[in-house]
Structures are given as C-alpha cells and as structure tokens.
Length: 363
Image 1 (cartoon, helix red, strand yellow):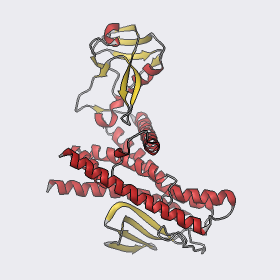
Image 2 (cartoon, rainbow, N blue to C red; image 1 turned 60 degrees about the horizontal axis):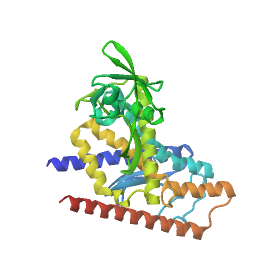
Image 3 (cartoon, helix red, strand yellow; image 1 turned 90 degrees about the vertical axis):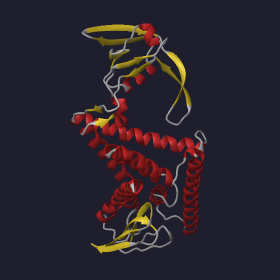
Image 4 (cartoon, rainbow, N blue to C red; image 1 turned 180 degrees about the vertical axis):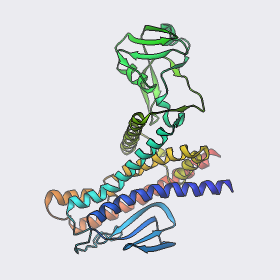
C-alpha cells in the first residue's frame, strides 16, 4: 500500500512539472491571440477531458510529458497550416519563438520558486550542503591543514584575502589561491593567520570524471538534522544560484554525453525518474520539492535542444524563417520532424533499457 502512495505522489509531482511547462506555452500563446485547442497532461488517448474557456483540458495515460495543441500547429502532422488570425501559423516568427521559449522558461521559474520556498523555510543539509557555515568539523591526518595547525572548531574567515561566508567558497578560493595559501581563522576569541601549501589529488566531479584538485584536508561541521537558515535576500541569492547551477550542470551533462566524455549508461528513463522522485518523497515534503526543482530544470533545458519535435527544434525552424524571410521547405520540415520523433523514441527506449539493466544489476 505504501509503495502505491509514493507512486501516486511521483505521478502528481511529475504532472505539476509538466503542467507548469505547458502553462508557459499556453499563457504566451493566448497573449498573442492564438487559440489553444487542447491542453493535455500526458500523451495518448485522453481518459478525461473537459471543455473550458475555448480549450479542451485533458489527462492522458502516458505521463511522460504533455502538450498544448494550438490552432495551425500539430507535431504529428508538421505540414498542417492555418493562417486565420487566431492561428499559430499566422503569427510572426519572433512571436512563435516566444511561445516556444515560454515552456522551458516556466520550468526554470518553477525551480527558482521552489528553491526560494526551501530557503525561506530553512533548508535541510541535503538541499544546501554548500551553504554550511565555514566551521571546520574534521582535519584529515597528515594533511596540509593539520601540518599548518588548523583544528576542529576553527571558523575560516578569509582565504588569500577573500572573505568566506559559506563552506563552498572555501573550495573555490583554494583552487585560485597562490601558494603558500594565507588563511585567516577565528579560534575562540582569537583571530589567527596560518599559511599552508595545498596538495593536488585526483577527485571525482559531478559527472564521475577524475579531475585534479587542490585540497587542504578539511571537512565541514555538519549534523544530519541540521537546518540552514536564510534571510530574504540570502534566500533569493540561494534560489538564483541553485537554479543557475542546476541549469549549468544539466547543460554540461548533455554536452558530455553527446561527445562521449560521459558514458551513455548514465541516461535514465521513466523508471529512474519515478524511482528518484519516490525516494525523495519518502524523506519528506521539502525533499520532494527539492528533486522536483531539479527535474523541472532538466525538463526545461532538454526541451531547448535543437531536436525537431522539441521546443528547441521548432525554435530553430522559426529562426530560419526570421533570418531568411521564408518558411522551411515542407519536404525538409517533414523529414526533420520524422527524424526528431525517431530520435526521441529511440532515446526513451534506450533510457528504459538502462533502467532495466540497472535494476537487474542490483539483484
């Protein structure tokens, strides 16, 4: 029974993310006077639909996305055109581009809002580990920090002249600091200045790649149930930084997978998405919305990829028309759209294949 509850929670969470994406398209389309014929959460034949305000609102069984069907625009038939005033096709290319951008942008805005809500209510460590206070919790044996005299409980104030407020700033400052590194600390009531030479070691980055990093051998002071408090300004900065970081990491991840720098086995499918949402949901509401923010950014970024059938592909078509002053050749448009759908379906099947292999390997 418990697993069923979490499956429902995961479905609802994913539906909210999809709804916000499509709502972005919907609102900007309506602002430009485009008639939206259907607003659907999920793909396939709707199991529920209702006509309201000139639009059919529907729920479909394949909850891996959604769509808004605008008059004069149909992804299943890219050659469908309608040049009546309330048609998507009748709008200028720049207007169509804004309609297309609105969905991914709505996902980014949703992520920012979620991160802000997390921060303003006190973020658990898992959601803001980088924002721990710069208090030394552990000094590694035989490390540069130990040799320089750093001790547990020391508060790091400055590194190489740069003021330190959060723990993540320590790593950034160490990487750019000149040797020997000057560190100003507070120990009790005393302000001390220490000097040390860092050590270069192999470390794993966010993409599981081995990279060289300068380390000094300290770890933060952290409690499992610690909550990190932010004031209003700090909460806004946290939301902006986390949204920007998530956007950068997802964009960089796509680039590395496409160039072969990161193994394509890291591509997950629907099972992985639902599994991750359910695991975070079990930890509590804050954890659930935290992973929702990350997935929302993921959806926004991936939809901007220049693949026909995605928002990014349609943006490319409209940019071509904006620059050249003429629509893309119908035959070319049709072939590219078919290729886009084939690629997306192949990607989903490959993700599902990886999911099954992952589950099989855990047995």
